[in-house]
Length: 178
Figure (tube, rainbow, N blue to C red):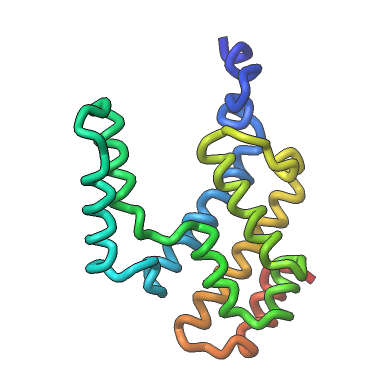
C-alpha cells in the first residue's frame, strides 16, 4: 500500500525522500520568518491605514458569493498586511554586510538566494509547481541548511547588540563553511 502512495507526486518527499534536510530547511525558514516578526515591524501599512483598505475589500466581496469562498477571502484579508517571506528575507539580509552575506550564503546575488529559499519553502509547503532541483541533492540541501543557520545566528547575535565583525568569524568557523 505504501508503495502506491510513494509513486504519487509529493508523497515520496512526504513519506521518504530527504525528510531530514527538508524538515530542517522548513524549520530554519520558519525561524528566519519568526525572527523578522519579532525584530522588525513587518507590515505594509499602519494598522489604521490597512483597516480602511481591508474594510473596502471586504465590502467589495459579492453578497451572493459562495459562503466558503467568502469566508476564505475575508480570512486572507485578515493577514493581507503581513510582509511576505521574500520581503522579510530581503529586509533581514540587507542588514548584513555584503561581503559577509556573500560568504555565508555562497552567492553574490542576494535576490537569487532569497528566490531559492522562497521557492523551496513554497514547494515543501504546498507540493505544487516546479520542484527546485536542489531538493534532489541531499548534500546541497544540507549545505544550504548550514548557510541558513549561519545567517540566522549572525542576525541573532547582531540583534543582541554584538558587532557583526566580532561574531562573523566565529559563526563562520563554528559551522565549518570554510
